[in-house]
Image (cartoon, rainbow, N blue to C red; front, side, top):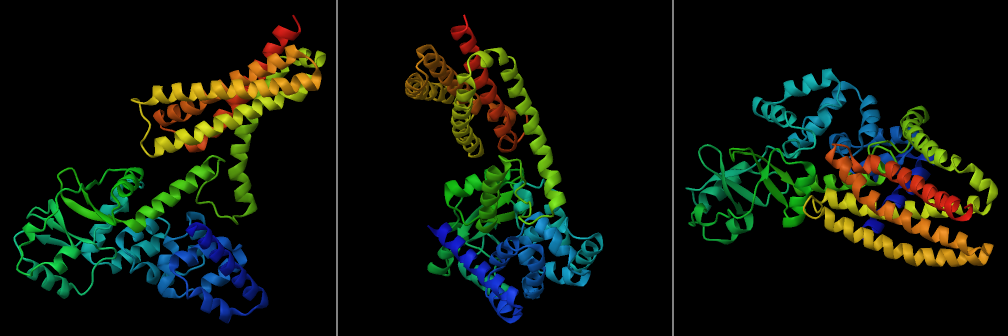
Length: 453
């Protein structure tokens, strides 16, 4: 429901913007844009074709430029950065949090990076270099080194006075982290505990050490899973020696989850989740041509199977009419299993310990569906063509292909994952090839054996 409301709001804003731009009235556009959050502005920019996008980008409050750049895809960001001069870029990114700056810095021109680093104090420059030293999709790259730490041997009154001297806290601060002299994490204290207990209470009496910290080497998927399992707002990040390095906050995790969803949806079609909706025709053509070429090659494999039974098809024309049914049903059934398995792999729910159980379950489901649908399809074919052997052949072929689809739907993504490939990106093509080949082979092979002998 909330997602539908958000989409309706975006569509309404886009319509108002487009109408104002078409009429040449930039005043209403500026007022509308500057009532939006940076994330909403980013979403609108991605929804506009290049010409209108450039106009709207020029109307965004310069104070929001950096945050907006963080909230758009890589390809759109590249275009926006190209329209900015170095001084604008430096002003846009110099006040960003370290984790957000780490996301942007590799897209910035070298001269801008140099000036940004020069403008930073030594501590923040070292923090940025530390974050950039970690793998892109790791907790170390996601974390913000700006954390508030306290010592266990102080009191609530001392900590509260320290917080007042700081004047402000990092966004999404719900805990203070308790560390020892070596900066190793001992535990954390909830802000609500600090403001509700007696000021003379020692900090070590309020420490919560039951919650687990996140390893700096953990993957983005693992981070998202931990936040989902524990309903965290923020979580500390530590190294192998339990030294506190930074923290990850819920806003970063929401971005991870959204990117994973977009990756699964677009990756299955061979598309990049960062591709601009209005990317240049030549660039989009090049990207999609490779994927379509792979599909063409796999289609020839299926066609070669059909070609081997050309004589059978010439003698029994009904086979040509019915062939797509078997292949199509297998493809649909396999896609259902594939989606289920990819989700299980992403959530860490599927592994060596329960793989055989899942295979056995999907084989039984496919067998039951094959019997039910095969019987129905066989009856229709018998009424249509009046040939019970043909009805028996297509019913058997459908059952065989559904079983093949079930096995492929489980084993293809699992195998790709073990080989280090992305199941969401390559699984669909391989699965379609398997179901097409097995569908044609089982149907035409059985037809040749039963109907021509």
